[in-house]
Length: 130
Image (cartoon, rainbow, N blue to C red; front, side):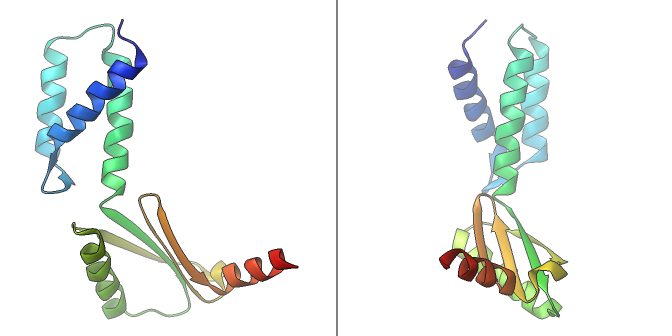
C-alpha cells in the first residue's frame, strides 16, 4: 500500500487531468474513473477519497454563494457574477439566497474566500472591540 502522501500527490495529478478551461470536466472525470477501475488495487479506495476531496475543492473555485438581506435585483446579481468571474479570471456560477439574519448587506463566498459587508458583521465587530 502506498503512503498517504504519494496517494495525495497522485490524486492531485488526476485532478489536473480532470480540469479543462479552468473548470472540472464531467467527461474527463469519467475517463479518469474508468481508467482507475480497469486496474483496481488496495489503494483505490483511499485514492478515490483524496480525488473526490480535491475535485470538490476545484468545483468550489468555480461557484460562488451570495447571501443577502433585503432586496437585490437580478441585474445586480448578474453584474456581481460577471465581476467575480473577471476577478478570478475563470467562469463563476453565482447562487444567491436571501438571509434575513444578515439584517442588511451581503456575504459572498468563492472557494475559501469570503467577503462580508453586512450589518450583522459590523455589529459583531463593534461588539468585539468593547
